[in-house]
Image (cartoon, rainbow, N blue to C red; front, top):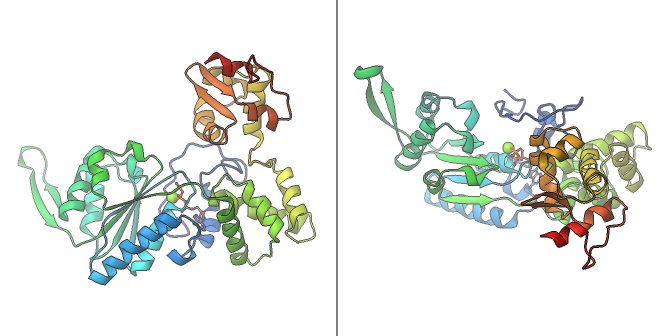
Length: 363
Ligand SMILES: Nc1ncnc2c1ncn2[C@@H]1O[C@H](COP(=O)(O)OP(=O)(O)OP(=O)(O)O)[C@@H](O)[C@H]1O
Ligand SMILES: [Mg+2]
């Protein structure tokens, strides 16, 4: 069990450095930082920063259910890692004053595992299924029925003598979380009465996350330092909290103890997180693209070899942010550097015929 009461949900094969982070700027959670994260989790909707739309809608769903004295409809939370899905699931249970049962797609190997969980649910309980897109098909089908009819068919015996005994379940609320909503089969998605999609946070929202976390950690962060940390956090509260902890460490050990702009800049320089939130590996990818491959396009596998990384790492951990920030282009012929990549590296983008990088003219 995790220190915050969550089972081990981590299925990622990410490389971890010595302190456990996949990398300082990865949005994925590293197992050793779980206690630190648990301590910083907002406990109620009012404390949850940003995501105004989802927060308002969810608050309505919960208030209406409470007013009717019923369990709310099932809730699906989707969005990239580190944006607050698990936090919201816990908040839902807390706001309802309901017990919370936590499991995850990968933890349910067989339909029987799910049957055991479902048949032991108490009335009104919130069942949180993390990484719900990774549920095995038989378990998924059992879940449809449980969510819709509050019934589970328990199979007794084996082979020809097996019989299935329907078991009524008390009303409960399923809360599913997924980083890959697209992988969820439509019949399962349709069983959720409310679907909340979490998006990356605006800089001022992240600043609020930093301020709030600093207050929780009983450290003083001046406004400029909060701005600096939040602008390097890739729109992700998990990264903002992680950078804040590193800046605090630096200030304590190397600095004057004060979390000011100078401390933030110096700490993030030591950890090689640049002004746009790129780390060493992100920059290595851009440098290879702009340098060795003259802007591309170049195949993903060639690019991965050039920076000495697995294809998977480049594709899932490095590229998405570079694409989102407009540094890298995914094209049918391979990966290409956008003009912003040259600028960011302090290089002169080669002029193409229309004043663009040459590779852009080729599509
Ligand atoms: N809106 C928010 N306000 C304040 N802190 C937040 C918010 N959202 C997330 N956090 C912080 O970020 C950390 C990560 O959030 P959480 O674990 O809920 O992300 P997640 O979406 O479940 O990620 P994953 O997909 O990896 O499971 C938490 O420790 C929490 O403190
Ligand atoms: Mg989570």
